[in-house]
Amino acid sequence: MANNSINVETEQTTTCLHLTFYHPQNHRQNIFGAIPLRTPQEIKAEATVAFGRDVNTCKYVFLCNRASRIQFVIQFFKPLHHGGTAFEIKNVSKKAKLYVDHLELNYLNKVDLPAKCIIQFGDFQMLLEKEEGESEDVFEISCDVSRTPLVQETQHLMVSIPENSILNGSAPPTFLKCSIAEETDENQFVTHPNEDIGT
Image (cartoon, rainbow, N blue to C red; front, top):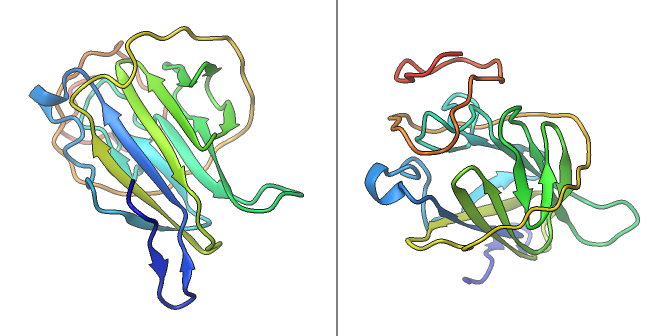
């Protein structure tokens, strides 16, 4: 893992989330083709970062018509009565359950992210690794893609934690089909003209 960058103005290191994605159809369909790889993206601390297929709402777009328009969101925060910074993840899909290691998150459930974990939904797998920094103004997300599965088998435990939502972001189009359970859309956002499934 690369060293976290230094904010030149403040001379503070920046917290970085390193995300590695895997999907069994990515080698054929370039599902992660809209996501900038191996180039850290600086994000304001107050921003909520959305992941999904909606190019108007999501900062990180999955080029897959069967992913939710907004699959999940990640937010940077400072824990109360605790030094340092942390991240939380919220499931914003009504149809697809989100798994953080062995925690199952249903729609609008959220949980604080550990420093290293596996996130899964449908056939998608994502390894998340947090690199601690000092800045409270910005953080970074650095992405990569794995050619091999990040986990071979999953045994999910049924544990849920509730909350509400917020959104933000952007990215380019070109959608392809991929193999996760089809979803009639639950999130009321603008549909991209290339989409071939109904609302």
